[in-house]
Length: 138
Image (cartoon, rainbow, N blue to C red; front, side, top):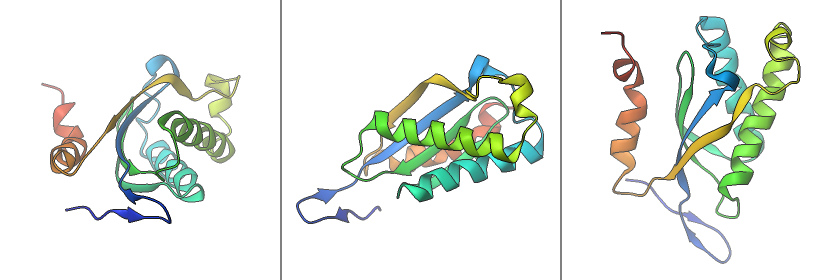
């Protein structure tokens, strides 16, 4: 059961299920090293802007996460922060990514973002947690 965040004038939660993909849906995170770099970059971007990550799963060609962002932050602003700052940090950690993405745009402009309430949290959490099973080759 989640607890609500309290501020001076409001009480509530702003949980979001987010999916982002690299540009052109390239399978960029096949190497374990790049998966770790991607995870660290997203965690740092979120920590800097007080976005709490509940769960983060990096797959070969996309990333799923459940985040709790401040109530004053819109979905678009949150995605700009996550995509922009994590891409900046990724290019700083891995210079050879510039060969594939010379313009500095690592993430696709499109994304999935949906609100997760108290009733949907466990279902969304288990979906993100079991991504390997969902995308396993048959």
